[in-house]
Length: 150
Image 1: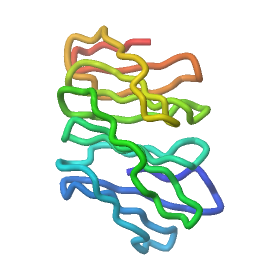
Image 2: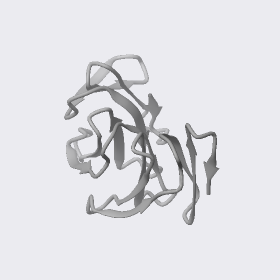
Image 3: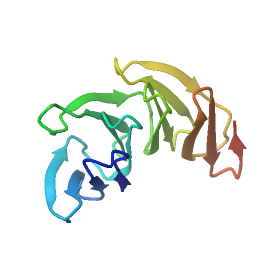
């Protein structure tokens, strides 16, 4: 579940075992259902500039959904590079990079505007469950190996 940072257009996104993402309005009404994943949706994140929604899935992919002028969220990119479940997604403060954490033990960085994979970060000895940008130049990840990496 994630909430858009834009205060004018309040949207909550939820995902789960049904493989779908549901967008909700502030009054609790379903606004849209997004489908692209073939397994459970594990994590969702809105970009700080509110133009992107990222999804992490147990189908080993992440999705990048771009907000359109009509307030729909079409799928722009399916990000494929992980070899195991994608546990979490996180945007950089400038909304230009996406980080994905995976059970394959890696964190991967993606260019949001092109969908291109730009870097793989290794260092954990087990599944990576969480990832966060601390600022535009620093990233933190946490793993099942009981370690945090900066």
